[in-house]
Length: 507
Image 1 (cartoon, rainbow, N blue to C red):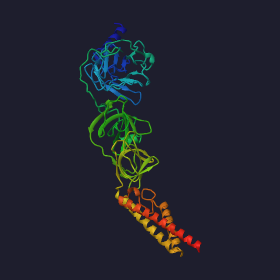
Image 2 (image 1 turned 120 degrees about the horizontal axis):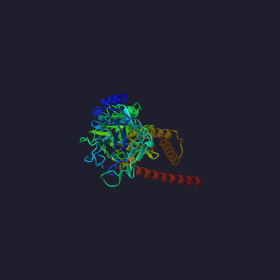
Image 3 (image 1 turned 180 degrees about the horizontal axis):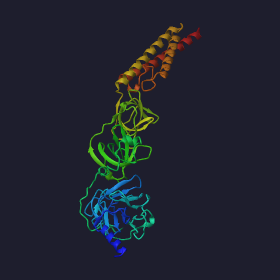
Image 4 (image 1 turned 45 degrees about the vertical axis):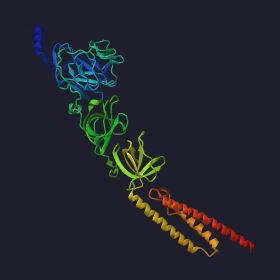
């Protein structure tokens, strides 16, 4: 027996089992349908091809996206790849309608994993065996090398090439019309192994549970302070929905820490205030704390409840996106409104575009709930209708302070009047009456220019430094009578002075 014959027999013994574990570059990703279908943009699949003469057990094999932070897309739980055969993996099947729509496939996939999501803009995949070794690669992290969205076409591997799958020359757009359901034209040739086991997939799998060993658990505190990795999983509560905040973005909180959660452009999620969510997302590198959700399936609503806003007076150092509540006295300043709280703390108030709030006058007591959107100066934005209430000047502490200030002003007016009368020289009655009036009016005018009430308004002092807008009808009547009396006195004094001067001329 020749040495060649012995070598052949030896190799035959090594590959005799029907299923073997393989770590060979001869197992490749042969077709990638990243463009979806006429039924749904999420109707995606890919095909593996075995170029060896042995069957390969795929249990434990996995597919990863490595365009950014490595992330496992799926792990094959069962099935074998026949020699010189194919194996079809899809996120949907012909008899299975998932959240992204029904599939146009007319063949039953070998394995269905609804977590399969292929990027249209940054495609870079790795196929790994059960031992974690990289068997094949697809793409270079940029746009897919081939395939199309109009008309829809898959990206096919040129198996005649010996390329690694990371060069554009390894791929072409499919021109095979295949057999697809649904309207419109679609090109591709998805082929299953023919050994498919029909397994009902989970409609909404929990990615946090599937990826628990690969993605670190984090908190919003770590996200805000930039101490976490680029992709994390965390649990938080929705404090403001996208209907109240901005399109496709909600605000989430975990105790005193808050951040934005940006939803996908095609998201169908409807998150409400009070929803407790578990989410896998990418940490934004922007200036504000934000988590980016890649797909709807990366978020699960764990429970629903209520949200209580933090009392702003108890928050010494407010953080961005905190939902807070405060009460204070309104003070319009240069087109905006400042709210002065009882402890003297001043907060600038704004409102989200489109939110309807009641008219706010200077001195009104307001109660508002909103988001902290700036820290210097401290700014709270009202994001919902009815989140601002105007209750008028009813703050007892502020009212008492205003009454005390008014009493002080009245006392000072009396002192000024007494000093003026004691220093006036003896003059004829008509002249003294006119001079006394000028002195008293002049002193009152000087007081009016220097006295202010608790919220900074200049007080009109002639009748007790009162805020006339808050006066009752009786006070207004008294004011009117006083003005009329003052005018009459001026007229009488004027006539008396004229008569006095006339008499001096006659003498």
